[in-house]
Each structure stands twice: as structure tokens, then as C-alpha cells.
Image: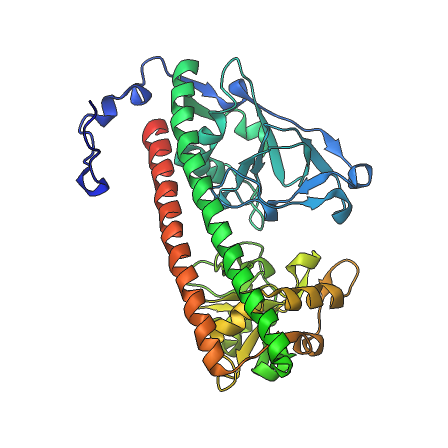
Length: 410
């Protein structure tokens, strides 16, 4: 008979964990990377692959093996690389960003990436991505990168770098453990996405009901704002600014509901920094220009940020009139269906899509009474508490995966 399971708080580490089979290093061999992996260099022109999936470095998330977004060959110009399902797409440019993913489909990718394919007689395709995610591999990748503005790895150098490789059967055991952790991570992400979807659906439904009963509450975005601050883009490096230096945001710093301070560029001249455009906690940022239509009008709240970063010319700060609209209510409205549909219809431009401040201000926007706003905000907060809890679980699983990789492959 199986006894009751211990509560998570009662669990204790196994003091003999280093003696478990996956940590046994007998039979390991130190081999050049090119002995067990190859660089696939099949070049293709986007015009010949217009309808195929295109994966750029901007589509890869740091330290995440999954590709969650992509474009089409018709969206880009210049020679690209072909990849096949199961290949690893590794960001060889700016390797410190730790961008690599396992392709779950065929397509083309940026030439600033490297398409890596396992040699299955030496390394299991299921194991190789985790070896490449290890600190040992990534730190070495950064060390051998060449170039100052956009440091890049050359295959001719990488293939000669040596790494410790377990026997195939041990690779299988390690991979099984790590993919199990990864599946738990993906489950947490799916729950998180479902919660975000439910949160947006709740807001849109409340908007629809109120617009029917109180049509005067459907106004325009400009009537809710005290002002708009436009950014500026001084001369900059392609490298991010060190924490003690000045930088300008990239448009990718403004995600769909999240802010990423690491997406910035170092100012070439510190005198070009504009203090009035410094990004600060509590700001609501919106993108006014992007290569892709879905990237226009994207909004986020700056929950925290370091000092010394300024708005770029492709971003705007929306200053709410807090006598009319609550800041968090405004932010959710910037994700609402009527607003997003208006932005997609109104953006113009050929190579890059953009929207003017005047057009942005004319976007339809729900502005109910402050009492209704607080009611909706209270419900939104409940969603955010649940989302925060699942995000904490994802963070824990990510740390667990990283620990296992680095303790095993040090």
C-alpha cells in the first residue's frame, strides 16, 4: 500500500544527488563541437520562399527552446537559411542574448542565425539543445564571437571548440529529465496564456455590454489622455548599454503587455541623452512604428526599469488624464478588440508600418464612469493574481531546468 504523499514543504534534497546515474561522468568524451554537430548552410532567397515560415532573431526568446511567433518569406529581403523540423536555430549574432530554439516545422531563418543539426551517431537530437543551453557552451560562444558592434560566431571557430559529451544512453536519460521539465514549463505557459485570453474576453464583453447600454461611453483615446510624449533616436551602437551607461530603447522593448529593458542600444555620445525622455516606472508605452502590422500600437506598463534609458522615435508615452481614466484600465483598453482593429485598419507605410499621434488619438475607446472602471479593475486584478502565481511556477521551472543543465554538463 502506498503511503500519503509528503507536502511540498516537507520535501528535502537527496544528499547523494550527485551520485545519481545522470551525473555519472564515467565514459564521457571531450570532443570538438563539429564532431557531433554540423552547420547546415543551405541558402535561399525570400522571393523563392514567399509563402514559407520565416524565423528571425526577433522571433526567438532568450533561453527558450520553442518558437512561438514567426513571419513569412514575403516579409523580408536578403538571403536566408533553410532549416528543417528538428534543426536548432541558434542566434550566432549577439550570442550573449542566449537565443536558440528547436524547429517544430520547416522554414527559412535569418542569416544572422546558425542552423545546427545533430550527428545522431554521436549525439542525440533530443540532447544537443540542452548542451547548447548550458553556461559552458554559451559563455564560450560569447568568448569566440568576433566584431565590436555586432559580435558574431563563425562556424569555422565554433566547430573546433571542445565540449564534454556523455554516452548515448546517458544522453537519453538526461534529455528525458530535461524535456519533462520543459513540458511542465509549457503547461504553465499555456495556463498563463489562457488566463490572459480570459482576462481580455472579460474586458471586451464588459465593453460590449456598456457600449450598448451607454453608447456615449464609447469615445476616443485622445479624450482620455493628458498628453503624448514622442521619443527620439540619437546615434547608437547595436550593443545594449551597460547598466552604468546611457541607452535608447529598441521598439522590441515594448512587448504586447510587457516591457523589456534589455532591448536597448548604447548611445555613442552620452551628451545625446535627453533626461525628459527617460523611461520611468509607471509609464505606459506604445509603439507607433514597426516592420509588422501586429507590432503597431502595442502597449505595456513599465513596472520597473533601470535608470539611463530613453524613449526611441518609434515609441510613445501615453500620459493618462487620471481624473477621467484609471491607468490600469487604460492599459487594458489598449489591448481591447475595437482598439486593435482600428490600429490595423489605420496603420500605413510600405517597408515599415506606422501610425500618427492624431490617428492614435482618434481610436475608439471605452471610457465608462470611474465607478465602473473600479469594478472592472477589481476583476482584472483577480486575473492578474492568478497569472502572477502561474508565472512564479514558470520561473521556478526555468531555474530548475538551468540548474540541472549546468550541474550535469559543467
